Amino acid sequence: MIVGTVRFRLRLAENRSLKGKRKVIKSLMAQVRNRFNVSVAEVALNDVWQEAELGIAAVGNSESFINSVLDKVMDFVERTSPAEVSECDMELIHMGTGTL
Image (cartoon, rainbow, N blue to C red; front, side, top):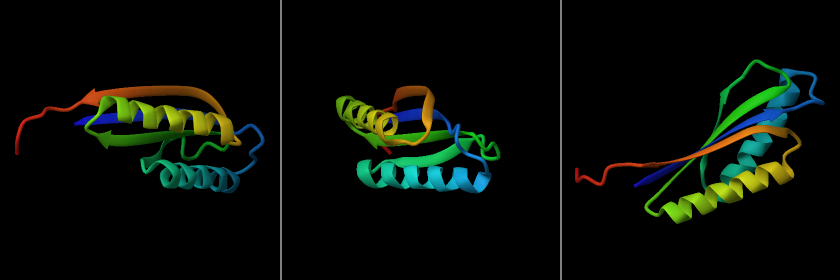
């Protein structure tokens, strides 16, 4: 089993309130979730107006597939998000193949 994760740190320079931030972040999270069938959550900076940190995860049995999906997610967020991507880290984790 392969678990792939991406962590985005986003800057919302034009944002002036937590309500505005939540609107942008919830919309982006829904688009990513629906388009790529991955898990998405705001994982840090919840009370900061102009920054957000999102965590995205995908699970599968092929490293090349998970890598491809997460590459597409990163490209999508960088191209379409109204927020500027200030950091982006991807990690692939190989889980044991033991039987249950």
